[in-house]
Length: 173
Picture 1 (cartoon, rainbow, N blue to C red):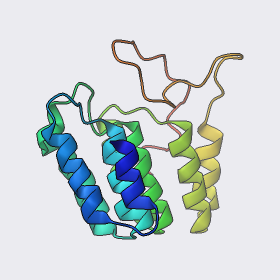
Picture 2 (tube, rainbow, N blue to C red; picture 1 turned 60 degrees about the vertical axis):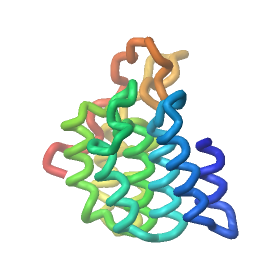
Picture 3 (cartoon, one colour; picture 1 turned 30 degrees about the vertical axis):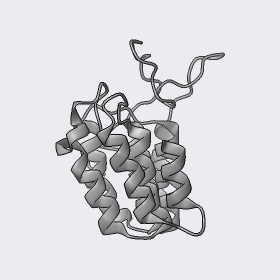
């Protein structure tokens, strides 16, 4: 289903009503768990493809109170935050990033290398090289031979690995 959401939302000709219909069918199917990847596909389509910041933010902000909020994993997760940060970077709205990073931290969502890379790109694109550099320098390499934790959707019933990242964003960012 996520592939259909991505296809309708990201491949020309864009068909947002069809994308929304697929998502509604997904939500209505009690045998399917709505995951962060589904929400991220919507946010990406609205924000990065359709360039509708209000719709992307509205979608993100609706997640905690949506009928899918009882999903097995806590949402929004890192994949959803990545889609949102990508939207903010794409639309050059880095002024909105600090509030969402505060929410990321408050929700206990781990910073991933993907999110950090988007932040570096975004800060650099608006000329904030000091913040881009601080984000980069705060990254920590994982142990040799070990993949960086939190960069992929966790498998169900698995304990998360310890964080390989210090918070790359100062609390006052």
